[in-house]
Structures are given as structure tokens and as C-alpha cells.
Amino acid sequence: MQERNKVLPRVPDQHKVGRPLIPNGLGVFYVLFTTVYLFLVYFLQQSSNPEPVSAAFTLAACVLFGGFMGMMDDWIDLKWRYKAFMPIIAALPLIYYAQAIGARTSIALPFLGLVDFGSAYFYIIIPLIVMIVTNVVNQLGGLNGLESICPAIVIAGLMAFSPNYLLMVGPLLFWLVLAAINFSGKIFVGNTGSFAIGMTVASFAVISDLKVNLFVSILPFIFNSALILLSAFFVGKKAAVTFDGKKLCSESRKSLVTIITYRRPLTERQVVLIISLIVGLFTLLGALTHIF
Image 1 (cartoon, rainbow, N blue to C red):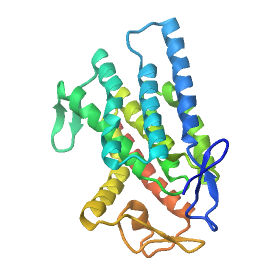
Image 2 (cartoon, helix red, strand yellow):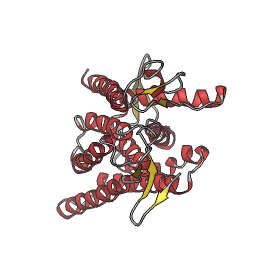
Image 3 (tube, one colour):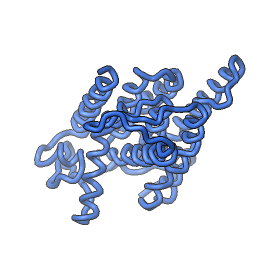
Image 4 (cartoon, rainbow, N blue to C red):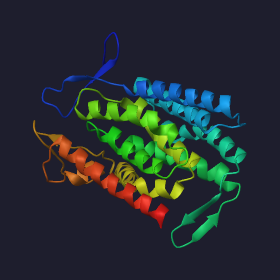
């Protein structure tokens, strides 16, 4: 149930005693800050060295669409068939940008080596990256700090090797502030925030040409989504945890959270920190693939 006040909607925190109402949808401020920041970067770049296409402007367009999509989901609860494919629309600015700069169309694949996808990279691979990454990031949530800390780790890993790292300095710092408040249980970033940050991860990786790093880094997200979807389609049940007033526990293994809490009571913060460490490990592995 959602309650509205004069400023922001509030939703109950399911994993707190008394289920207190918490402000939801604070991710909209990330969208606003990031858009202004990237437009400022775009203005400064164009003033000093005009270019026909801009990474800053492209990323801003993608983040805006991700935020708009998340806001629609917060307001009207979009069905999954719409959420699954709507991010493809946000791939259009990335396709244009990649073609304009003559982006590398080859990807190093395990056991296959370097595979050149040619024009299929622009019209198939980029939309798939955007669609998959945005949705898997959105699905790894439900606990305070989980949907905000984990994407921040992946972005930090990508920034370490990106020639466009300055694009994400301001947005990442702002997101970390939201993540800290979210982890403390005082706010939710909502679908507005999770879709926007998922779109940020996908778009920044494409702009930075760090597809392999991205794939390795988000393996925990993909694993989580695969479990959720398989359970929904073949078992017909959703992943769920029980809360006894202090700790979370699960009697099934239908998501990353329920695997970690399966017959093993843990506090919400313990679960978030464990999953964050797992994401950090895979982000480190992604960095090693770039180095070696």
C-alpha cells in the first residue's frame, strides 16, 4: 500500500518492526542531478572543442529515459512484458553514438576468441545490452541498500578503465549519498532510481567500450534474475523471505537473497553486505579480464 504526502509517496518497509512508512522514489533526484551534470559537461566540451556527437549528451538521454520508465513503474506498476522491452528505446541514442564514432564492433568471447559482429553489434548487441542490464539491475533489490550499493560498485569498476570516467564522477558521488541514506533505511530510491542506475550502467559500459568487463561484473545480477524468472515460469511462485522482527530467513531458493538466507537467519544489513561483497568480487574479476 502506498501513502502520499505533500512531497513524496511513502511505502511500508517490510523488513522493519511496525513496517514504518518510508519516502519512496528518491531516485528522481539522481536523474535530475545527473542530467544537469551531464548537460553542463556537454556545454563545456562543445564550447572548447565542438564535436558532432557527445558521450555526455548520449548518456544524459539514456538516464532520462531510464528515470522516466522507472517513474511510470512507480506510478502505475508496469507489467513485466513492458518493462522487459521498453529499455530498447533508450538504445537508440547509443546506436547513433556508436555508429558516429566508429565504435569497435568486435567482442572477446570465452572459447570463441574475438568475434566481429559487424552491423549486428549496433542493431542487436547494443539493444540487448541495454535491455538485459537495465532489467537485471532492477530485479536485484528489495532490501535497504541492495539496489543502490551494488550498481555503484559496478560503475566504480567500469570507471577505473574508462576514458570517459569524468562523465560519472559527479553522478556516482551523488548516488553514493543516496545509497548511504538508503542503507540506513531512511529512503527508497524506488523503480525510478533502480531503472535509472541500471540504464546508467549499461550506457556507460557501451560508451566506454567495456562490454566484457560489464558482463563479468553483472554475473551476480544475471544469476539472480535467472533464478527469479525460472521460479516464476516453472514453479509459479515468487522469491520471498520471512522477517521475525530481527532477522530474515527463507525456506526456498528462488533468488540470490533467498539462497543466502536459506534456513540461515541473517539481518538485513548482513544480507546486503554479503551480496555487495559478491558483486565486488565479480567486478574485480571483470577488471582483471581487462588487464590480462
